[in-house]
Image (cartoon, rainbow, N blue to C red; front, top):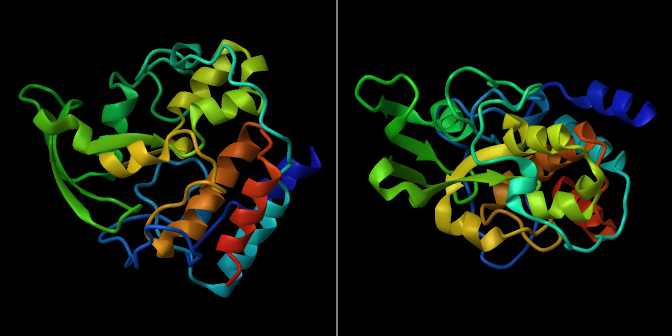
Length: 242
């Protein structure tokens, strides 16, 4: 398939810039070990680093340009359970599946620093420091305040339902819901404000990470052969305008 082949050719190496929008903040580069989306096509590397180089911005625009567009369908029939229970370890075909640790803890362990586990466990994260790519702030997180960090589906499950996932089989929906490429631990209140919005309605408050965010959104959409809305595609391209 030409689009998939082109997308695959672009999923390798890089750095983010700008846009406008309400509630925006200037975000610095993530501390430590965050990966840019173009060099993290399977989503197993931590975080979301900005894209800043002209070549990377151009690659991001080219990737976004391959997306198909379609209007949102009805939300009728959508239920979180249609994508499997949260957070399952048995979504075959995605990284970290069946490793004995649920998806949420896999992601906390992937992105967290100074990670501490529950006594006797090498899976259940009880404490960590997270650099939140959406706000640019560092969060000292403990399990007793679990909702302070939420796992964001970059392509929201309800959004995917309205753009084709309602017709997918159960296995494909479970993969999308548990694919680390589509998942980022982020500031809980910020994620709650996103809801099931696409990029035309919501972008991270940190302007510096917006190109990286939409590129990763595009990577997920292309991987699952899912269109985006025309307004979303226009806004996505604008974030990597340079």
